Image (cartoon, rainbow, N blue to C red):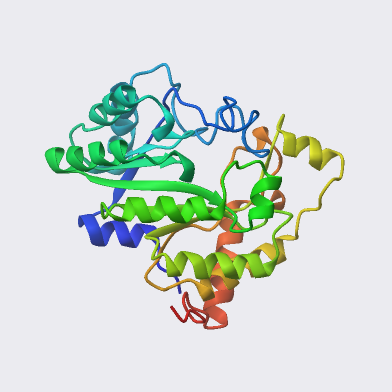
Length: 302
């Protein structure tokens, strides 16, 4: 059907691995005025780290607290230190080094670094490459792209282009780090053609993983204002399901799929997953693919 992240981790590490979400004191260049202000029109004030702890708590304390809870509940033995909020490689270099070093606690097998395509610098890559070798941990990067359509990227105030994303991927791949790309499949300004193009581009670049998101409208954002004013229409749930399945058809079967939909607390959003549980829509996608004998890569020629 499609290559699931949980299976990939088990194959890579020999057992189930759990993520430890970490919240650090960071920002983005399209928030602090370097490129723009206000951030992406869909982004909340705290960025994407709503699952993590307060950023005033040290990295080690955050990790030990979450690790203890997960270990007790699931008997987990291996973990990924997941720096998920804002642009981790945009903070000053010495601060970045300390965060990364502090994440190398017992039983951590991987450090996952979230950032923007326009915030990749050689000295940061050099440092984590050496750190990974020294501490015997894998290093991976998560790059927010959201759309391959430059007009859509401008509309949502991303502050970077598709070509900058490609440059970042090529730079990171020189170090042989895994790369995950974030894509929103129901941005109002994207068409099905853009979705197919996104799958083809991910395949051509040989991205390690993709993380697919269903757009949700966070209260208090510019997109929430636009939504309330009727400046755009959300596609239907059925159309989203169709987009996901079409994307997977054109995606190289070797690429890992981390998720198919967004997950967000209802109290934070004006709109989320058409008022349905994310797992119900996920089940629907999988049921259609199974019933119609659809598999990832069916239409991929790369």
